[in-house]
Amino acid sequence: MSELRAPGTLRAAWLLARKDLTIEFRTRTAFFSAIVFAVLALCIFYFAWDESIVQPSALAPGVLWVVLTFSALLGLQRSFALEEHDRGIDALLVSPVSREAIYLGKAIGNLLFLSAVQVVTIPALAVFYNVPMGHEWLVVTGVVLLAMIGIVAVGTLFSAMAVNTRLAELLLPMLSLPFFVPVLMSAAQISARVLAGRPLAEAAGYMKILIGFDVVFIIACTLAFSFTLEE
Amino acid sequence: MIDTKSFMVGAYTVATVIYVLYMLSLWNRARRVSKALDSAGARNDR
Amino acid sequence: MTTVPHGASAPKRDPQALVAKPIFDWFFVVGVLAMVALYVRSLMFTPPDALQGVAQKIYYIHIPAWLASYTAVGITALTSIVYLWLHDERADRLSEASAEIGLVFLTGGLSTGMFWGRVIWGAWWVWWDMRLTLTLFLWFVVAAYLVLRGAIEDEAMRARYSAVLAILAALLIPFIHLSVYLFSAGMHPMPIVLQPGKAKLSPQMLVTFLFGFVAFELFCVALIRARYRYGVKRDMLAALEIAGDTR
Image 1 (cartoon, one colour):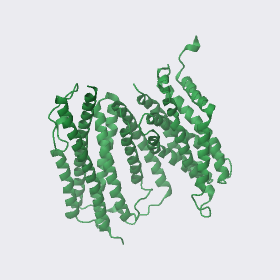
Image 2 (cartoon, helix red, strand yellow; image 1 turned 90 degrees about the vertical axis):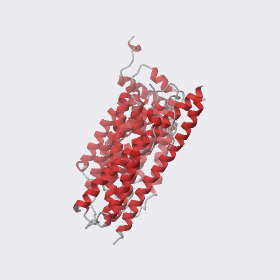
Image 3 (cartoon, helix red, strand yellow; image 1 turned 30 degrees about the vertical axis):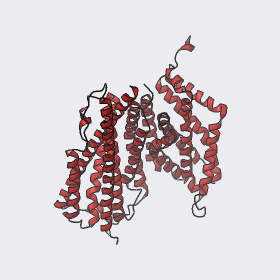
Image 4 (tube, chains in turn purple, blue, red; image 1 turned 90 degrees about the horizontal axis):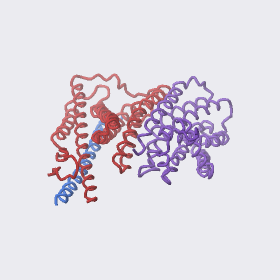
């Protein structure tokens, strides 16, 4: 009998995330195109500066965050567009899972999708921009993770809002980019410092902003999500 | 030394243009909606 | 301005007294006149600053514009909370009106600030100035808010979505503030050509300055009021059109 019980919030969220990732895994089109986009962008940005004036490794942190932002937007875009297709969102709404679980499930799915893209993009960045691979990359990976959590927390909510509007594709970046500002600014400053060999303590303030943003917006967006669904 | 007066005049001009343009846009929208409301009201009265 | 002779003919809706009222009334005229008076006083009857010269006169239309935009944006944030709480369409309409006016004053404040910065800092734009950067991002948020409103047909959904956005934006502002603060404090010296902080205001200048705040606040409230009344009429028109279609 216990299998018929409605799952708890976290369990339901995990089920939803797995559902999205399964759909993604069957075709892999979005994943593949996001990776190609990200690596392509890396290559194109290389030619945006004069190599003899600016060292490629000095550019790397900046390029990393620009590419991460836009590949995140690509992934977020399809998160709810997927449900719009056969009005899958209605099926989700009548299912016995809480709205918080729907939001968290979507967010976890997006986070895993984005992480998978970064697993390919960041090594590609290190190779193309000749960034030495050292222990500082552990810190950068942590910062990337923290930044992605913030980006996904806000982006998932706005993705749910944007699909119901007339401007869907255009509106998501417009809504989310201002919210990404503190995340990107902090993350870029931390990673630039760490990659330049400076101590992490120098960027402690930015670290606090990053963590604070994640905590505040995970809570706020989880609560706000129920307002974005039809009542 | 730059001519500070022209920058002062520039700032006042730009500010005025912004506010006047906004008022014109609001006035224009107000006129249109009032007109439409009048004709819609007349239609509904019939 | 034409007035609408009915209210009774609006089908199955509370007759709204505001619909009959003109959008531009005496209050609006007072607001505009206050602005005109401010221009005249600041340009003709206020002495120039000893250090900054006539460029300092930009202050009189610059700093009050900030206050007006913060007032308007603050009203948007508050009425958004009220909307999610009470689901009153008036709160939604007020937040729409004040967001639009907020954008107007933010634009005014930013552009006058750029002229002042060109004289005092020697550059049209500097990223290390916190207020400038913060306001720019606020401008983007308010612009996004208005675009979002324009992109949704359904009234209730539009109100809910935009209220959610406004409340999240209110949470965002402290974070942007903090990160811009760190960015500007840690990295750059302040290349100031003149010392704007040391400007002393003579009594005459102080009066102009205070009058500037009053004039801008009046103008701001007048604009919000007019925009709100426009919103009432527009919504009434939409309701009439829907009623006309279903008959």
